[in-house]
Amino acid sequence: MITNAGKEKGMVICMKIVAGVDGGGTGTTLEIWDAAGQKRDRKTFGPFNINSIGEQNCKRLLSEIFEVIVQAGECRAVCIGIAGISNPRVRELVKEVSLEYHLSTGIILKGDQEIALYGAMNGGTGAILIAGTGSICYGMGSGETIVRAGGWGHLIDDEGSGYALGRETLEAVVKAYDGRGGKTILTELVKEFWQISSMEDLIAKTYATFDKSNIASLSGVLEQGAREGDPIALAVIQENAVKLCGLVKAVSGRIQETPLPMALLGGLLTHDTVFREAVVRNLSREEYHVVIREAAMDAASGAALWAQRSLSCH
Image (tube, rainbow, N blue to C red; front, side, top):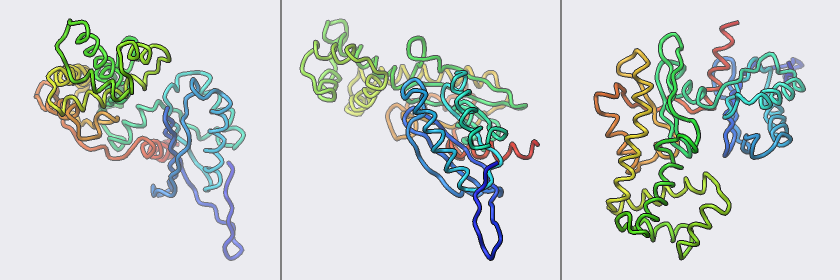
């Protein structure tokens, strides 16, 4: 292990630490704890997504993170949670760079939803419902049984996600234009948000340079329409809230704990919105067997906690 040596009264001081990393598509967070579980440092870095930034940038990012870790003290364990951790090349890159910093024996690799759940439930039984650009429900029962529903990508799944809300906002606009659906203020709101003036512009904006986040950003337009009382916007929100809650029913039905503690995560569920209200209202029904609670800590802290608790297993 590489250590950080300081000097005090002629003595070499080396603090034992653990670290947690939450690597996401929009940014990466590193949290460092001492052996007693006290947070010592927290830093943010650029996005960690091999598909969007490439292998070399991923290696550079990992080097920056490991450099901070080894400078902080004698690192006993690092838990890294990354979307797409099942990708063999991502795992190889982590191993390759960690070897350069003599950290390979203490590396724990997990999916981003695993560290989010671990942090939210303080390492205990429970579940998380995430609705951001995508959507997933992920839970852990007694005996560390893992159950999931959703999260299969925008082409075949992601019900109740930002992408789904954005897509159905566009669907409402084109149906209103055709006369297949009722008139809606979403038409003007989308034009204003995208700074376009015609249906031709809308189609070009949608398809010319397809980007999931571009479509998902329209969930904010839908929210605005709902707040202004547009019946079509309200209907889209309610329908998607029910679909999102379907993920919860699938997970809670397979975990033998009633009621199941559940934290709501992701951009669509962590702000005071009409959509969140609809989701909470649905989940309050007895058939879902859950009780909503605040997350104990975020994903980066969850990763640090995982690293710390791994030491007691050795």
